[in-house]
Image (cartoon, rainbow, N blue to C red; front, side, top):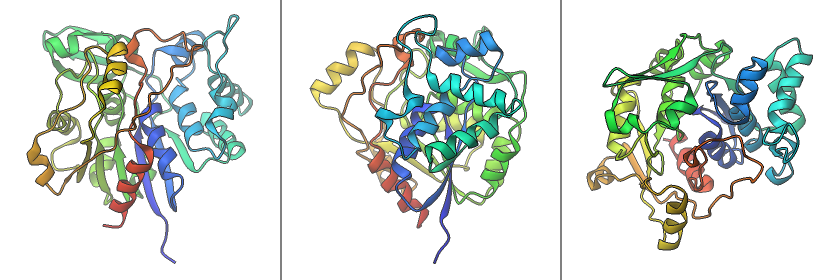
Length: 335
């Protein structure tokens, strides 16, 4: 019997969760290396109030890779009243278990994972605290994930570079997972505040470059208002290569599916300026670019208790189709 392929996903809560929910049904060894630089929502509030690492993306990956139905998963519940209104039970529970294990966050994640029967290893990209900083082309600095997300200047002025303050070391478990992977996935996710910061964590991009694994970039479905306005598939790849290096990515998966007029109207109500990511027809002839209809046409409802997030563009309404995406990824494992 052949060994199970090891797949490592680098990203955040939403995008990586979609991948995990589809791949967990395949005979694979899954690992998610998760961003730890959030500053908004429940995670950000707890980070500032309790001095803990942001846990929201960890929570989402635990939920999506669990055998427990998402609808009934206790980590998915948010308080709808009182002083804890808007906070996630999952974030609080992970922090509390961490305290019971003498502050060992990784042990807390592993213990929760056993109880939820998760189908993946969930690894924080770092165990150190840092904020994301965007240096614009006019030399203005925007610090913290939430402020960058809500800043229109990134698209209007342009980004000179993204960096972490302070610089932080990668989790050794993350480096080990990348080294031993058969296939590494970057994305989808918020480009400047999730994907690029993971690559900026010390030793991560070097480990990816040295790894013998196939490297895959999954492009976002939509542009992000204020951050990636006007980005095409080619532009996403171009900017990614500035941080990761040219020729590192072997395959790029992107969406060719078109939303219905009704779906587009619903999306425009919340994201009036966001556009579905465009691409050149020439990419369809390139064997390293995999274009497919991977658009999930169901609209995700925002939890009414999710009141700690500022800005409508913080929450995604539409996602990649997890089943179609998983099928493509699994086929790449066999190439």
